[in-house]
Length: 102
Image (cartoon, rainbow, N blue to C red):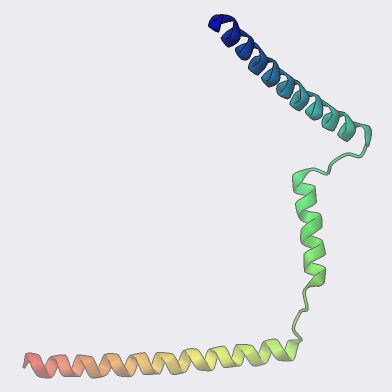
C-alpha cells in the first residue's frame, strides 16, 4: 500500500516537472517565432558601435579655441611651478644629505 502511494507521488512530481519543462520550451519557441516574424535585421555589433559613437560625439559640447588655449596655458604654468618646487625640495635635501655625510 505504501509503495503504491510513493509511486503515485513520484509520478505526480515527475508529471509536474515535465509540464513545467514543456511550458518553458513552448514559451521560448514562441519568443523565437515572435522575434523572427518582425523581419527587422539586427545591426551588426561593430556597425551599432560606430552609430552609437557618432551619436554620442554629436552630443558633446566642444570647448572654444580660446578656452582650450587658456586651459593649456594654465596647465603649462602649473607644471612649471610644480617642477620648480620639486627641484627646490630635491636640492635642499641633497645639500642636507651632503652636510650630514660630511
